[in-house]
Image 1: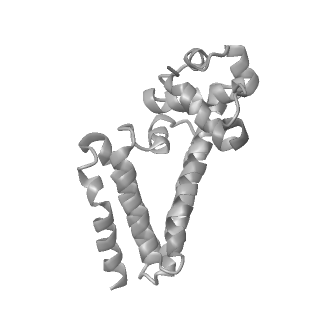
Image 2: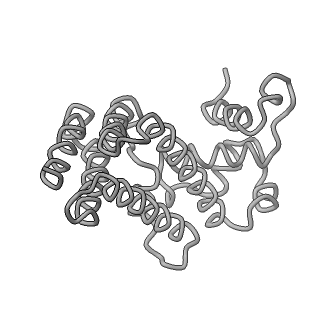
Length: 211
């Protein structure tokens, strides 16, 4: 039976190259290392995982890891960048059917987040977890965390302006706090906690600024 990290590596390779998914081409050491690192960082935490563990899980060597990534910190940053890309692809797909209705777009995001929280791992948001673990301003992963938050805030502000909300910046910040808080409450109270009420809370908040 394949280990979870090998399965993740196959999924990563399939996204990168559908043709590779249909063949028996062996995954590169870099792809295996990247997939193993993403899984280990998420399940065990960034600081708890060393390069030896990543290399072992990937069936590679430390030398191969350092050939592919200059350092563990750079590997962390690359993993976070992929999580950021995945999140905004999901965002774009979620709001696309509501291009002319910003209120519906926001509700779709929160309903989607509630659904994701009910089915995803109990570890919560990858980048949210990293924001707690990575406090060094010089860490390359910190820049990814901050860029992700700025982009999420910008997108919410854009939606709030489109719905002609009073003080759209304030509403957007309230929605962002609700969005981030929903994921963190999932860690302690599970999917049936406050996370289950995300869309209703978002709707109430929008009404307060648009009524």
